[in-house]
Length: 286
Image 1 (cartoon, rainbow, N blue to C red):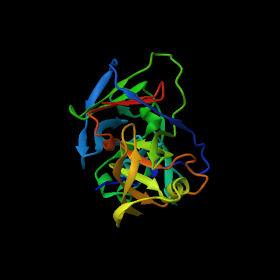
Image 2 (image 1 turned 30 degrees about the horizontal axis):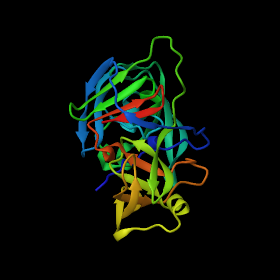
Image 3 (image 1 turned 135 degrees about the horizontal axis):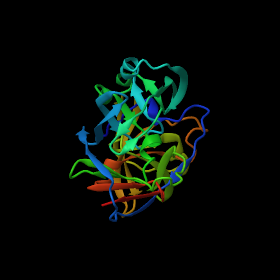
C-alpha cells in the first residue's frame, strides 16, 4: 500500500508564482560527486538524513523532491527562538495555515546556506510518518546543487555542485514527468515523499472520459486525504503498457498546479540509483 506524507512544504504558497519543469527520462551516466551522506530508509520509501541548523547538529530531515519549500517543525523553531509571520498554502484540496521564518543557516552534506527562509508547521499533525523528524528538505535547497543522486543499494545520497561563481537557475517549484493512461498523456510530479502513484480524479476523467478500471475500488485514507485505490489498465511509463495500482484523490483548485495531474513516487521506478539533473532538467535512473 502506498503512503503519503501530507505536509505544508509539498504545496505551493497561495498567491505565489508557480512554475515547473518537465524532466526528460534518460539512462544514468557517470558523474563526479562532491560529497555523500547516508540515509535511513523509512517505510521503504522515505529518505531521512541528518543535518544542522545553527548550532544544533544531528537534526533529522526528510528529503522530498515533491516539496517546493523547506519546512521545519514547530518545536525546532521554538528551540531556535525564531520570529514567525503567518501565511497559507494549498495542500491538495484545502488551505493550510503555516508560518514563515528565517533560520540562521542550514547544512546538509555539501549544501550550506546563509540565512534561509523556511516554512514552520507541526509535522505530526500532517502525518505520523513525520513524527520525530525536525524538518523536510524541499527543492529550494536540493536544487542548489547541479545534480542530486540517490543510491538505494548503498543507502546514500550525494550531490554534484556547480562551479563556484557559476550562475544558478531559480529554484523549481516542481518537476513533472510524462505518464500515459489508456492513450492519454498526463504529467506527474516526481516525488521522493510518496510511495505509489496518485492521480487527481477530475483531471484524470477529463483526460480519459471513458476510463476503464479492473476489480473493485477500495477507499484508503492518508491522514486527512481521502483516496480511492483502483487498478488501471493501459498505463505506460517509459515502457510497455501495464496494469497499475493507483490512488485517486480530489485535486486542488483549477488554478493551482496547472498542467500537473498527480504524483509519482520515486519508489515506483524500482530503481537502484536515481539522478536529478537540475542543470539540464533531466531525470535518470537504473
